[in-house]
Image (tube, rainbow, N blue to C red):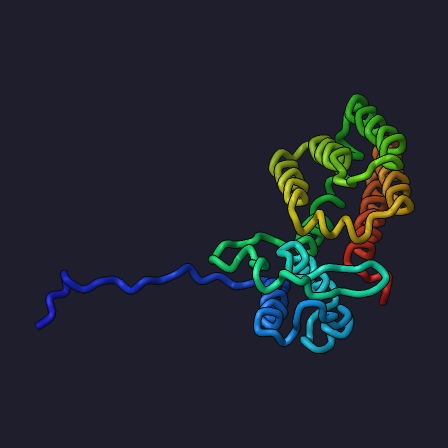
Length: 245
């Protein structure tokens, strides 16, 4: 008879639900490693992949960004997306060893839409004169600095949005906003910004933030909320290719 004390526990791993972009990236990554897509091959356009996989185009965009950050593919502006020459050797997905890559940019945008729009409205009611002056000064600095930036990492954006969140007088939500902006310092975000940030949309970001501050300074929650929604709508279309539909 087997002694229960001598039994060993099987090796188990943590089970977690994978996000849609992870599942898409894994499928394409497996196809690259199995030579269904070879070095130098062109990957189908995002629109075609979305139809083939039955998912949204923004989810495919996230997956392609993850693959690019992992070194499996490269995006050639105006040409297409290709498998890198060293993809099968060097490309390792960040979650391949069981790590959680965290929420993707699209999920972060959805959270920002829920939180920052209401924070703007609250700030219009609760911001002090000094806080409004701080926001105005940050926007003016953006107008001066953005045209000369080589790497659009948007540290000024971080300062602006976290200052606005503090002005809304809810410490819990202010911490969430700071966390969401901290997530933007990632390989996926760097690749995403490199794809889409242009001088024109830098200028538009300044215009949008000026309008947010104008609503706050006017003590008009409706105007401040609408301006934040407009900023996030434009950013989401820009980052996730919705303008191309």
